[in-house]
Length: 373
Image (tube, rainbow, N blue to C red; front, side):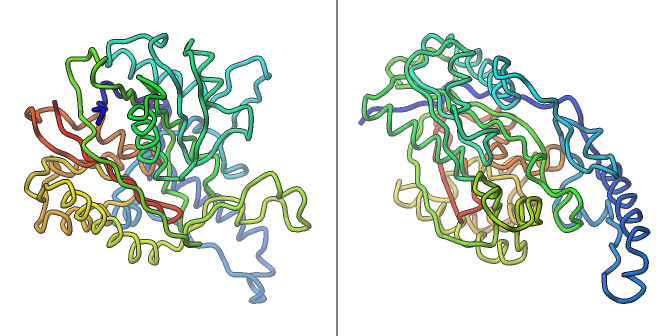
């Protein structure tokens, strides 16, 4: 079988960041405005007053302390509460493509190759800026990549699913080198006016170069030992925004047109799915838990990650073994596990094993077992 290696990763972090304290202050100001606007209905018992948010609770519930966003002012404006992004002409590079290009160039530099050596681009993320033409094809043109490009979406698992797709194409001989890119503008599909979820997401872009090991030139290489994907339908994480909304007779900006989740159900149902998949996956590869030196998990919730890591390893794990980046980045959907790998793979010896794992809406779970060459 053809060996596939990861030879470079890239990370684009927006310049603006919002702390929990800033976010809570903006949310509370919005809540106060709403309560004043509907004071009569609230007093009559026809409407429930909005409660305030709490920075300490956010940390306790999620582990998140701040998040990067493409536009801070719009999110923190109590009269707006969502990003303000200037429209661009069709001749300009779209925002999502711009972010993806920057992350891709970082990954290419790490791999020691230029864009002309890449045979295709896969953009895998939770929400696309438009339906078509594909963001991947726009990035392909901006970078000067030959071959093909396409978009795919498996929500928070998009990156690991994208890695398997790329590996399968390389092993089949369809390509020698591929770029898998995750430009996540999560601030655009988050309801910042909902106290239960307003703190969850942030924006970022990541990229991974995958190559046939026979043509790879990078000194640092990570062999893809195995990939495994799993999906199971659930409504517990859902976003109903789409082009058919305009054909409905409902409210165009109804609450269900943005990110929604039943957090407790997700925690209860997804954690065992993920732990069982990782354990079964490494077992089928004739590995044991003690062979794993790193768990680069999806960065959605600190408590979820700690529980999954304990179940896989059969003991408490250190932050070195299961690194966390969501305290600074928050949940960045598909990019989270790639950020963790990008920032926390140093000091691993040759031959060391680790697992990149993502999980989320679908439900979906993707695990990628890697070995440092």
